[in-house]
Length: 354
Image (cartoon, rainbow, N blue to C red; front, side):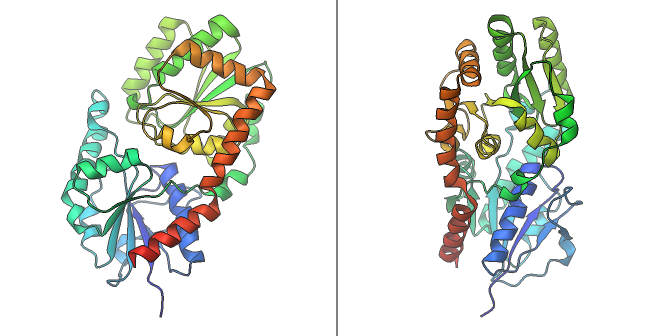
């Protein structure tokens, strides 16, 4: 018997590098498992991402599965849920609208729309997938009864590429010690806390510590301005606004960094996964999905004690034995998220669903 198709939909693959990366990784898994698999989107595909089909060309039968990746509102969502396929909602965490107050109103509207879509369409969903228990809570709150937790699937092939030489040359020399923050620049990411950590590093430990912010602030310019004012008032000079990154430039930023720092209250965990995969110490506050992703690996804080976090960053960077102990734990944890484990999880899930 011909296997049912497992297709995927996301409104705009250009909007989220993390979603586009997972979509591509999942498509490769489904194809290896013998399922026809196409990707559909409402807007052009992400650069280097999976080829995206126009949703108007989607004509499934009732056995086919459509994974609907969800993190933002979409005008196409009603059309998606009107199709004959078995719909599976894949939750990528909706940014709480309250945290977007004072930013571009379109951001808050998109977040409110995404939350409303969760409620409106839960009866049309065969099952829902969250990447963490943290993400599953929102699905429970909006009425979903069948929720499976399957960890985020890394597109492992992307992390074996060559780092951007331009970025490497640009930041080479001068004795800099870099701390990396990766992800969209939004209030829920609590960038202020990382600035206070940098302030301690510069004043107390070594003035050559530097913070590199990799991520888009589109729509959140007001928050960026707030951070800029804080930076000026603290007389911090070692902050680099790198903006959105390509895969190659992201690899370069990881390569030049002593650690990844995530003090977010709403951590999705993707950046922590990438740090572990790229053998960079991951240091995080226990907000969002961070405790689930790190497990016993990395360094996890239950309070935002800026001096303690700064001293820990400096210790890991200066003490080879400590750093290797952290990396050894991360390497063991990374095995849990390896491509074979991801394929095994999705194979078992599809068998249960069918």
